[in-house]
Length: 334
Image (cartoon, rainbow, N blue to C red; front, side, top):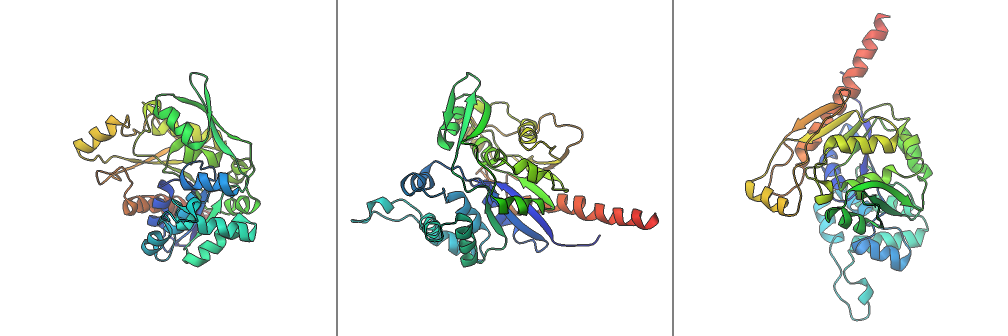
């Protein structure tokens, strides 16, 4: 086996993608690229988007912090929320990092340049790419025919028991040209973990993403979530997630990484009271490799960074390094 640096794209947003990046960044054989959803409508990001007309900075900021040279200190400073100030009440509640990134965007007039500036400032090990710099919102149609718009509203609807039947972006937006070029150079793509309909699906729905992914020769890896996300996702499995993702990107998912670990009975009962159940693999196709492991190691539903990063590296090395060695041996024999 010949070791080489692998250029990996990690797609998603929310809290799941930064956790994955934080675990993978310690691997010297990986060049990381976060392709981040840009359709957040809640919290500080949503407010800045509405009030200042900037792109929502929150998901990009968290990914940059995860890749920072000194992640702990960077998070402590840039995720602190500003207190109420007598003459600047509108700034209260925003994180310092969100304001900094929004200010850099307004100063440069280019969100990608602002993200690159933040990356340089933090000494990030890897790149962070906003999947699109055009404003849009995630929309959903439920099984009862009703529709809703906005990240918060889509999540709330399915949490209340409405099953999502279809999701789309409104207006339809295009992938940033630099991001499309970066994706074409990836050796493999990792999708997830994260809120399925509002963090994982939106970047896959951007016009041009599936065309860029079609040129990735390596595997598409889906990291299954630990839990379903409310009554509307009752019975949802990793196999269902694969079907949604495959339809969106118009190519198969090659590998699913799924959890076998369970927390205490008390923790499970607490999540059950929120209508959240452990997400099962389901009936995956025979061509999909299923990688199982204990990734849920505490009472909080969060993938263990170290275990997940080793699982991803195991898949990547087997698929991209061992296979290449075998190919070279065949070529020499011919």
